[in-house]
Image (cartoon, rainbow over all chains, first blue to last red):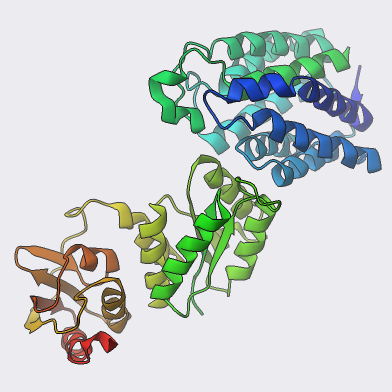
Length: 207
Length: 224
């Protein structure tokens, strides 16, 4: 099964719906270790992504993702804007003007997203960030590449879930939570959680 | 044509305050604030950072300074999105000291790399600055500060500006302490007050001219 611009737009709509649904949970995760704005910011950003897509859907998957990237960068004031924005921007650049994506293109896209987040946030695995969810997700997607887009996204979402959970005992080393040092232990990183939520939404929408 | 500066902060008021302070040191430098969200909340706004960078660039490039974490990311994204990403650079520097050091360097006509370096080295602990280069025989003189505030921020900025562009490496000494005569912050850290006697030494082909200008400035009580 291929994946065209309209399909990618639908994945983003599903992602937006999930973020809206989990807005309060993300705010609550962010409150003790951050500034309690992750759910709000991300929800606002994805809300704008959806309303922009409702006006017009660009012709290629890359175009859709570039639109999402620029919208998130402009509309999300906290770290999530530049981080997710860079991720989607790198994916858009990687995909170029391909009209349709196969499984290997989706894996390549996930790799580009991870590279973008790492380049922007300069975090490594174990710092209690989005990278802890995205890194195992990329590995799982690579391993499941031959099973098709839906299956590889599902494997990526499973791995991201576990990766997000793995941030709970960690000391945060990046972002606002890092100022808390030891006190950041015992909290799931909100960025890792939202990454896992988005991948799960993409996986379910791709089925 | 001077290098412009953009101060990126989560808070509009913090950005404006830093700009106010820095601009006072360097009347001819474009220093712009890009702080807070358009609706007035705390955060950094990509679009206003991009707009500020474009406005601050008079052709000599722009140096961006930031306050915390995601402000750096927003600033870097803004630079990457420019038609010529080489026209601007994001510098990791202490915000207040970096902004002051960078604007004074820009006022003196330093290029983008030198302005960035001035900001970046503003947070370096004393003693890490590079030693005076050995460039011919040193000339020196001593003078006593007669102005009310000594080598405080404004007089220090005037001193640095008076010798900017000269081929001279100037060192200022007060007792045991020595400072780079081209760094406002280093001069301020000497804490030279009224009636203190400082020693000025200079090397380079225009060492004499540098000393003459500093003497003239002190003679005028730094225009106080």
